[in-house]
Amino acid sequence: MPDHVHILITVPGDLSIEKAMQLIKGGFSFRVGRELSFHGEVWQRGFSDVRVSDEESFQQHRRYINHNPVRAGLANTPEEFPYGSASLKESKRIHSKARDEAQ
Image 1 (cartoon, helix red, strand yellow):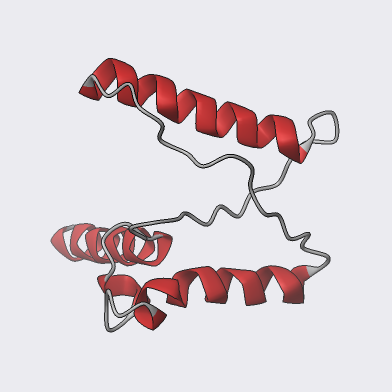
Image 2 (tube, helix red, strand yellow):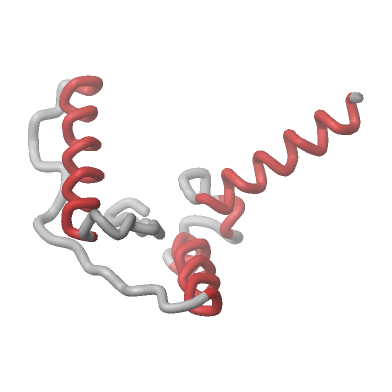
């Protein structure tokens, strides 16, 4: 998404969600500075979290995240959005099928 990111993660029991987000945002900002020589603000302060309670909730959140680019008009299907996990999953499926057919 051009202006936000969704992350569906499992945080180990000895790590808080706040610390996990600090590591993700800090690590990304460090790499952007080093690799792209960008030294401005990358992230807004804070974050929003939603707790996933069970498998059904997990699948519901996964579908929401996958369809976010479609709702935003950035793609016709989740698989068409090149920066989403649905696109990555589809790409892996295609490569795996091609590899199997070549054998």
